[in-house]
Length: 318
Image (cartoon, rainbow, N blue to C red; front, side, top):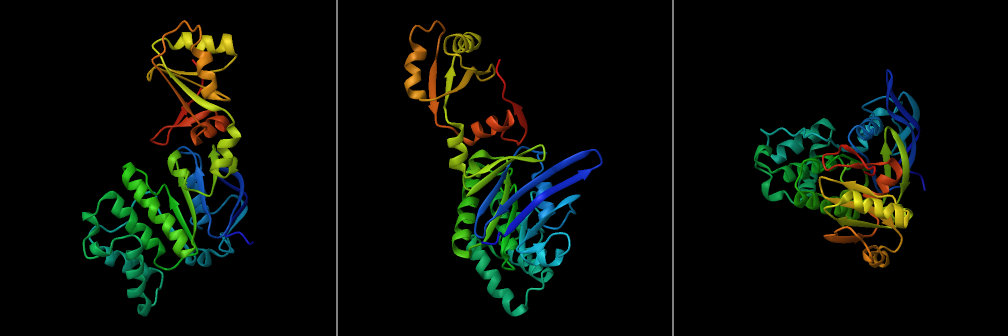
């Protein structure tokens, strides 16, 4: 099967800085493919190169079968793009925003009315088509931007941090629409995010850090690769717990004084907890056992965590 997106040795330099440092990947038709990483990891730079908005310094990439360097117009006709920051005109209604976009793409007049109706139905905004975009909530604006990106029937939809700044309920609603679009329209989706729970919607994920892909696989395969369960102990004596785990069980642990927790990984977490309590000298308030998460995967492969605002946070022990 010919990939809908491919990148080989893709690199972007700005003087001494290299925000994208020689990445390779392919995306199959109809796949939801995610780039997961903190702010500054190279996600948006990659999207800009794939959308022909930025020329690569080295390497080659194709989208919908067209070269992003030499066939820019063909690439742009076959993609939809939802930027990280809103580019809607707040003074125009939803329908006017869509018609303006359709005019820019040269959508034939005889198709305009039909396509506007279709995409508004897709994202559940038909009842608000005559309201100005400035009256929309953040989630509704995102849905309108997705509708605009789909108006000209692209083969590939690029979503750059599509739910950044939205509340969890709005993020969930946006993803329900994206998943439905994949099923009904068969569109390929390439998205970037720093939300770990959002990456679970993807068929495959590439974790990118400092411009390089450090691991790429399905969410389940990535989590299975971590192997151990994640145990979180709440305690007023973090140092004592970390010391005991190290000395008695030879387990490295991460202590968080602000949260009053100690976290460590161990196979068979539920079976290990009784051993931890047996003859333990420090006070333990609570214990929680979790299967491996994408947070654990990210920590394993990068040595850091991603905060909710997209920033890197060290993941070392006390």
